Image 1 (tube, one colour):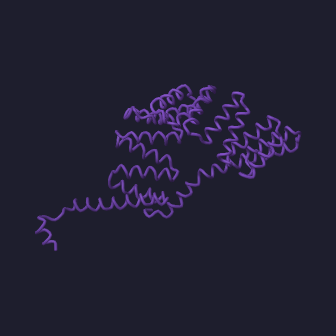
Image 2 (cartoon, helix red, strand yellow):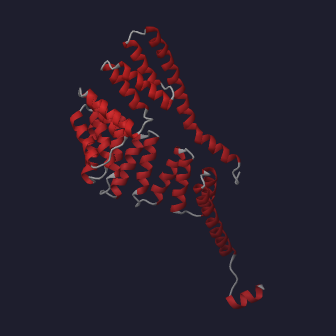
Image 3 (cartoon, rainbow, N blue to C red):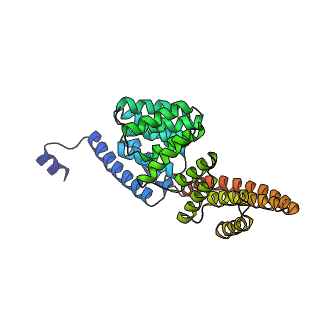
Length: 322
């Protein structure tokens, strides 16, 4: 057989050529399996397959899939490292530093985030997203002047970057520029981009400017959209207590607990109600309960943050490459 193959082809493939062909086939298989695993939600398997694929050959798509697998696995540190590699290997692709900046923001590594944004702007100065990210960074670090400037620049570059209107409103809130903040939220309302966050912030701004009745309407509007909003229930109850609408406040608190169970915010509101009506013992009991619930909520948040890590360990325990 080898004789005839050599006769008709002129020569047999070299060991190097055979190795290259085998590696190419293995790469394609590993990459395909990695993508399939990611689509099935098996991020641990996806990481294993894609890492081995990249050991055989550099590939931008496989690298991006690996980054996404680490994100799904709640391993943002590793995802950021992969995003850095993408920035280095594909320096002309603006999406890579933008992705890196978002990961660094979540990791609260703000100095590095600023560098990633600067890299994205250097690649494509017409993109608004890096300026929005810099505004997020400024708000998170308390650099409100630069945050406002970057959010404004984002909006000037892209008037339909609606997330930046909400972000700038939050920045204005911190700067106590309530009129400007309300104007940004009104623009979102006029353009049909209203959600719970917009309505809640509008209520907070209205409260800050002495418009308590208008704030109550904003919070009630939140509940009409989302009857499970804990923030809205608590804020409504507190305003009703302020208005001495004690029966209404009691009903709001009852509805909140019916919808969500007991939670610290609403028990604090109930404590305020009992204080207002002279139930000193009941208020003291609720103060104790609120502290207990707050501690439990913090534990629950911690457990939720670790849930994906537990899933990672589960997948790693059946990792086909271990």
